[in-house]
Length: 260
Image (cartoon, rainbow, N blue to C red):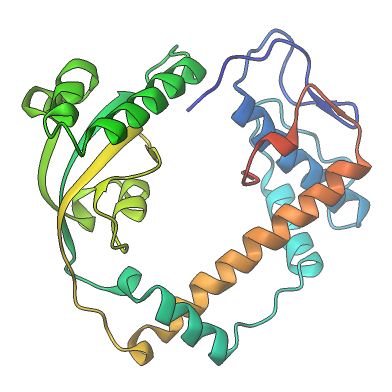
């Protein structure tokens, strides 16, 4: 998803993030800025040759990629998840590890297509979400009408009906928002996927079978490691950004640092 294009030159410590005249979305610029901060940090740490050239297209060299990996391994001190923390996480999210869960759902898709104004699209999607949530309890056909009028998905013709879905039937990012919870009704937040923004209503659920903790101990530990990595990376990038000269890019505007 790309936000409105940026015309001003964007630089990290004087290094341009895009060729003159190229227009990039805000998220792409933040991604490139994060990567460039790490590339320069790897050079400063002696892990990458000073002659490594900054990319003009956002794709760093293989040497830079390896150096950044070595840098993060050295700088991000990540504790191994304890047995207690793993068990606590599993107890709170057991449904996430269940298999065979199904949901009966419908949605309203606001598709992201080339050239679309994502800011305006989000505003329309959020207005729709508020409207159907406020009407749903008193007007059971409100969601179907909105889907027929607004959805960019062929399912809009049938009121947004998706039928019974398993996690494998959906894009992974859509499944993460819909499965593994007990939520029913119109979900309180927009669901983001590679296709766009979705207003989703869960009409019914069939719970899956949750395995015992021992069967998923490794998966739980990996989940906690990934969360710790993201938190540490975010903090490290915040530190690097605070020490750098940034022009034309705002790293604080993104919830998660995007690094290529």
